[in-house]
Image (tube, rainbow, N blue to C red; front, top):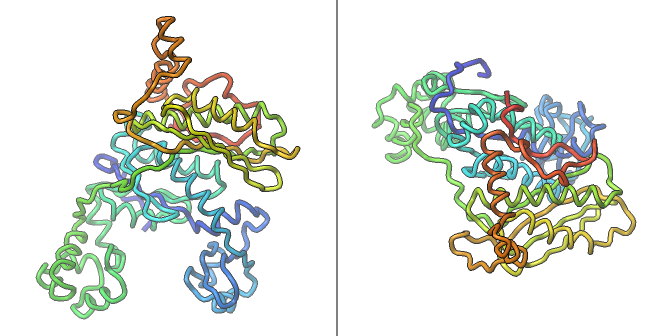
Length: 418
């Protein structure tokens, strides 16, 4: 099924991004010495398998399997206890990567999401280029891989991502949708669980092709009126459901892990400036302002420290977010240890149209000088440049890190996507 179905991307704006063996991949990124070995993430012998590497899956190990059964199948496996805080942290980071592509992100689980990239094509290129950029950034930032399905509908994109695994991209052109589906077993369709599959099987329906070719009333007799009509539509590639973010954003943040633990506070502050700028840009993209700024610092001993400050007035200006972040960083007691990770997050979000906003002292001075909020206007001008030429087309000189000081940042520039 990982064959080519064609190259036309017209009408294919839906991406399904799915992390590969997510929990296990996070553990391998933290323990690179385990790469190539069968690794199982799970609890005690009475627990169940939460995730398994593809090397362990080759022995028949799969998620939700009892640990005792998994160890009988693969006694040489390395068992790693789960660290849900680490998985949550990476999940949040990956979703932020996706949000940098488009505001239309529908997260459906800790390790997968749908994107509608129709509005991002002019800026970032066709969906296949966007998919490759997402995979590259996720790999560079978090050391894990993801697979991406591209199609004209959500459910076909999801099936495509499953067939692209591991670490691949599969495009199903709109014109090839029905042909792609007809080659599948009926259990591949959304909503067809074990019981539904058995019910359809009693009527001789075991493949999507057989389902599509059956009269809709026959399918309804097998599984019910509503479910039958829905499954018959899916078999013909009909699925009008849009990508729906479906939740109000409560915070926006970004963070970076340094390649080597950083002793120089100036480098940490420069990275905080870059992160503040990214947060502010995403606020402006969503027409939001933030009232609270939080910084997160992780030292070399893996101790995580957070500090927050509530601003006098809500803002979407990177400079204001950075000044608050810099003051918070100055108040963090690092205990003489170098910094492993730094993050900036803004919270207490509200629509810019509804925010009651008093001008800052700096803006009052700007107005006296006749520049009328020069920092805000300058950052909006930078947004326009980045939208046209890419995220790295223009940057603050102070935010450029020293060579090899940090991992690559999340950027999607046209030059990188070719």
